[in-house]
Image (cartoon, rainbow, N blue to C red; front, side, top):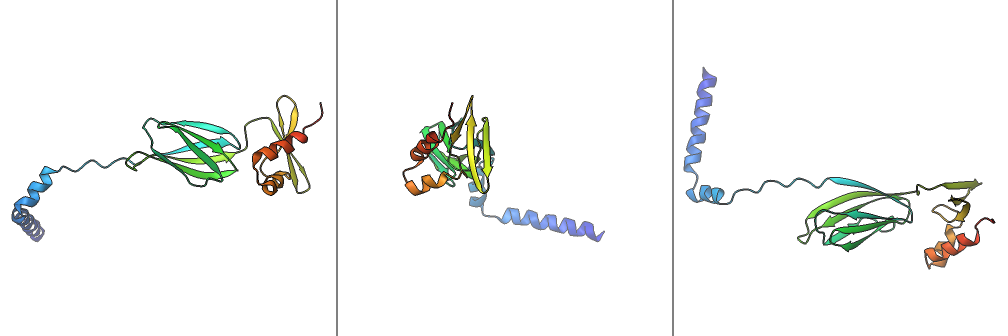
Length: 172
């Protein structure tokens, strides 16, 4: 019986507190209804082949894009609903797209990996050499190859690496 009295006493106290609340507080609360909480943006997953580009089409207009690690992948906003993501080196980073108010409307985990082509990797001791076969095998320079230091030393980028790779192609 005492628990029933305690419950009634608590209900009476709560009722008294509600009636003692200032009138303007209850009016203000009813005048501005709370906006429903926004659903969090769902993480998307993008796989891009090394040295390839992939389009990402969005349903909502975007104003700003941010890529977590620009050495892993590069992102370019073509228009307000189209982003191109290019794989630069093997690894994983993230991509975030914001609307004109700065609100996050898209997020993705970007993984850069080997291309899905007929590719052969030869290992000679600690050195790695890559060949792309379509329809015949030709030497190419890929991340991890022994010739990648040519790119680092030249400083002029992938064009020099492509020239080196072309010079190493197999004879017909």
